[in-house]
Amino acid sequence: MRTDKTSILPISAKVSLTRNILWNFLGAGLPLLVGLVAIPPLLQGLGTDRFGVLAFGWMLVGYLSLFDLGFSRALTQLVAQRLGANNIKHIPELISTAIILVSAFGVIGAVIVWLCVPLLVNGIFRIPPELHSEARAAFYLLALSLPFVLSSTMFRAVLEAYQRFAIVNVIKALLGISMLLGPLLVLPLSNNLALAVSTIVAARMIVTIAFYRNCRKTVEGWRGYKFVKTHVRSLAKFGGWMTVSNILGPAMVSMDRFLMGILISTTAVAYYSIPYEMVTKLWIVPASTASVLFPALAASIGKDVERARMLYRRGIEYNYLILFPIVLTVVTFAKEGLNAWLGRDFAFQAALVLQLLALGVLINSLANFPFALIQANGRPDVTARIHVIELPFYLGALWLGLQYFGIVGAAFVWTARVLVDAILLFVSASRMLGGRWTTNKSLATYVTVSTLALVTPILVSVAIKIQVFAVFLVAFLYASWWIVLGKDMREVASWIFSISKEGNEE
Image 1 (spheres, rainbow, N blue to C red):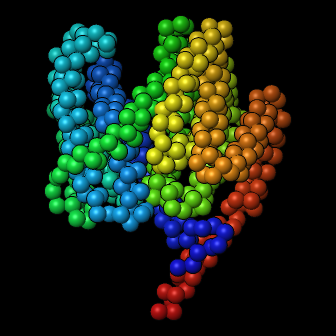
Image 2 (cartoon, rainbow, N blue to C red; image 1 turned 180 degrees about the horizontal axis):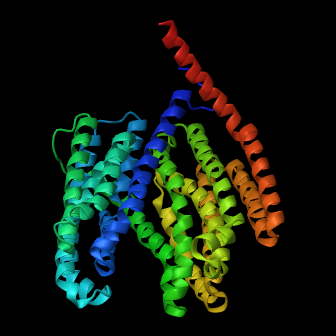
Image 3 (tube, rainbow, N blue to C red; image 1 turned 90 degrees about the horizontal axis):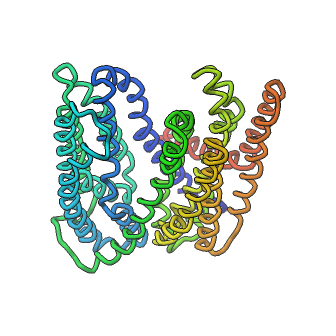
């Protein structure tokens, strides 16, 4: 196999990583497309109130995964490291120990959620009284599903460590689709919430079995379950810090809308939430890439820093190349797009919010890669400490921004926070890669150019805006090909050509 001296990674390995990233896009994107078709009839069939409770159920299923205390990410990191070092002897017992622990957490969590159901239905969620009995039954079913939810995350973590992203994403896509189509398919029988949620629980059980069977086929030497105390410490050390990030990260993501509803109004939340939900869908791009690079970084960072550095840099560059033209388009035509979609009044209120959030999403997307590198290096404490430090400053700034500048102030503060977060993450990752600042200089260049390109359309008229957009886009495409993409594309094309030529000769 030919390896380019300057790129470190073999061409076939680049193609493999690309294939895994594409599988991740499939796993996340296909349910999203199905949702566009399934949600309108589901909303009509269930009614607004029942659909709202079902949405709470979907949300609860997502947050139930916090009960794994970060062990799933820890398991991926530890297994990938052992695979990279060709130290596979103790992998089966490490996996068994993690699954036994997390299954126990699942049982404890199920009991806690079960006991909290009356509080959720009668107090926290504003559910109409006539739906209380249905909602209780639905949430009790979700509580029973918790052990299956956590077990499936552990099996998935193992498959990701072995870079079995094809099977992971096929199963994940089927799960996402079934969580939408299941409740839809039972509507002709009944619109009862418990029946709808039972399809979600059944899908979770089937997915757990599918993940388990593929894990048993993948892991060599896994004969049974064995609990080894020596593995608990390494899992807990990594997973404990991951839990801090898992709690504070989502809290900071949703805090802007929560405070907005308290300090301003629910109408302001609508003007803010729709642009937010639109632009944050772009997170599918870095999430799909970073989850593929995480086990590769964990396997290489300890023994091949040059390869880890190359993977890290390529992740940043390629995601920037994908996202920048999209964000540039959103920022340039935010007002016109919102006006055509939701009307002039909505565009007047939300256009600047959309533009600020789009810039923040671009910065935050790049920050996914130092985040992944730091955790792949076994240092989740770094990201957790950054979140702990950021939280009080962010809450104070967010309160002031909302008080004096409304939803625009919230969008500005949110974007400023993700910029500070990105700087801290990039500096920490740079130190782990031997203190080289090349990537950080590249980031500074990206941010400077992006800010200039993304701020300019806000300040000029429509006619000039189109010209500015065209100039920036052409310059971006030219620089992308000759500075970043050209060499790699030629390498991949040459590799594919050589394989085809060999096949024809045979």
